[in-house]
Length: 307
Image 1 (cartoon, rainbow, N blue to C red):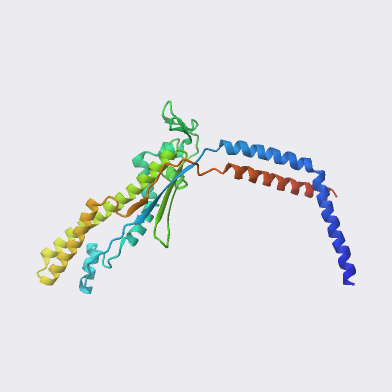
Image 2 (image 1 turned 60 degrees about the horizontal axis):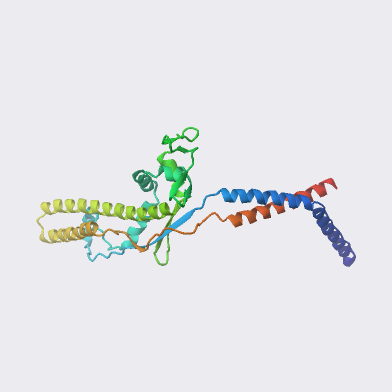
């Protein structure tokens, strides 16, 4: 009984499959024309996209070991003075530096300092022969040197710092390998020279930022410790306070003499010769696949709907 039921069912499935192929074959010209149109449009679209170049730098956290150990009774005092009690190395400092590097405040100041509004918001290409940016005239008029883009409120013709920061986040990335601790910082742009220059400047800027922070903190700690020394006559306490001052003085010395304060460059950024994106061949192949799939689905749907 089961065999008699299953055989007609298999036959029906076979007939349906044949019917399906017949329907697609009958509409083969629709598939061919649709695929051709999509592929041509994809080629023009892919060619219209500018080349994006990626410059990458490899960094290593600078390790520091503190030989100073603070007794429990002076732990609170040392903490108030800003002294690193645990003798933590560059790992914690580099983690803080990475978060600062990705922060809106740091990137916004970086954009403002180097006046990056035009290359971020208005560049649409790069002329290899002249090594000049190709600027979108609908966004920025080079003749009058005015921002002319049409935007809705609350945006203005000239991009704001926050808007430029959001655009820069798409060009910039930084990641740390959890195993080795190595940091990869990369910048993408239509100009390979700007990509390399910005990567170098970002590394220099974060080292300078951390150096200034440590220097300011150490100087404040030294001033506080000197005040505490003047207020106590206990010899042991004064000796420990002088040790704390010595530790902070080392920090000041390192901050003044070491340019790569937090991150040491292992593999410097270079001007890329080959583009990183777009993948034009993949764009065209995806368009062909999409067109073929959609046209076949449409043909099958119309066939069974009419039937």
